[in-house]
Image (cartoon, rainbow, N blue to C red; front, top):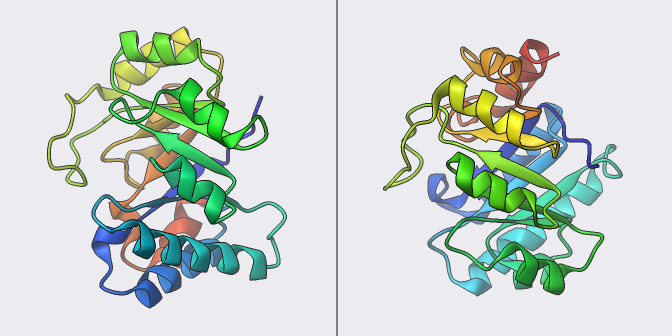
Length: 209
């Protein structure tokens, strides 16, 4: 059973104009204590994604906490291997978890996004190391978000799996504690880390002790 930190940081390339900006942002998150970071790029071509991923890998290996730092690639199992990431996270419309597992092997982490009890129960039967559930609250990070599940959706998800549970969608420093109280092991955050990322990450960890 994998042990997830309370804060699951997502670095979405859509918010940055250059690779340098993206890497600087990630560096501030790491300085703020982030030990689990997902790289997400829904628009870039494979070459750009691999360049940015390799820069993030270099960043993670340069820090004092490099041995604890884990990098997760969103969607692309092939690029996860090429960039020497620690795992892959897939959604409902990506490769199946078992197909991804065949590509990445048994050691790398595999996460699966789910949006309702049926999807979560199905994902629970796979070799996924952790499951994500959401959106918990309204979110602006997706063009066509799934229906909001609320805290009750997190509680229901907790009843359906013993695997580590990551809650995502509209989570901020204001509501994060209530999400963990509802049963999430970790909260995935994008927007509420964008301003003053180091300070924001530190505040999340203080809230989620």
